[in-house]
Length: 446
Image 1 (cartoon, rainbow, N blue to C red):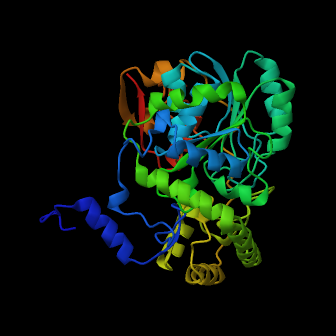
Image 2 (image 1 turned 30 degrees about the horizontal axis):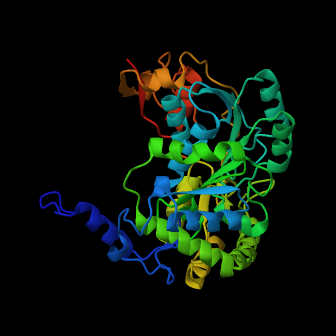
């Protein structure tokens, strides 16, 4: 865009310009810009009418669509969200924990959960990860970590964790679920990036979770914003729709909800087989990358997410992302340690060939130092998230933030583990981590 002659439609023009680069999409949404069975256009952009049902008081077609999704995922109840997984997460916490309760959280939670804590007055108990996934990756929370937290906080209303994480690392849901059942506490899972795991028998709901928030648009052929909240606890079901209505728009998108319905039907007919076929392709790409010298995440991982660790080849994840971008492959995420590719059955063979060749052509360099783990202790908590997020704040240079109280979840990257949460004191180590990951400004309390 020429700054002297700005466009009258800057966003639309930017999207057009990006599409003209014709890069292979290894990012969300799962439909990759082409899905022949999504015959949706502006004519389907309807509203709540006598024959189109009402999302938060669903009694006919929306309720039938939700019931069909519940059957596919083995849920006692499923609610549709056109407000993304954020709405599903907020509704899940409101339905299971509620105002003023205490919840045990793994630290790598999405900012929507942090915001829900503030809005609902939830008191978070943080559990740190064990760095068992490889250099620079957060790792996983184990069953023993959860057991210890429950025993220290027997008044907690729920356990909440994220699996898979952004790098595809899977937690041991069966073992954690067993601990939660023993202590009669619900296990809530942010499964935003794992809706497709139903294809492999690894969906958290299948493995014992009480409820899951699933961002279907990330890996399934669903329009952006489409998600499901699945519940397997009878007592919580009546609270789910009122909880979601507390946070959600009164104008839900029928285009998004219809795409969820169509994607669920496709999954039942052929989608699960398509994902299992894709897993073989990703396994071949992993083997190629390993032979090339890339590192890979350790432990159990999502069968169709490709996360490469390029530091052994002399390049950071961000630099590697630029290399792949120049070769025509747009990744989902990159940071200092990793570059993440999200493949779905809707990536054409051309995309796979392009990525395969780019991996084969990746240059060798002098290995970069081991990134290690930066999240080895929790900052000091001064205020609750609610107190911190609702107080006046200001943005300052991160370099001058030591001793201040964070007014936001400051994170090296949106999917990562926050260095500080709202209400926690920013110390010198936090400042160094944030600066080293490119965060130059931070929101703090006045």
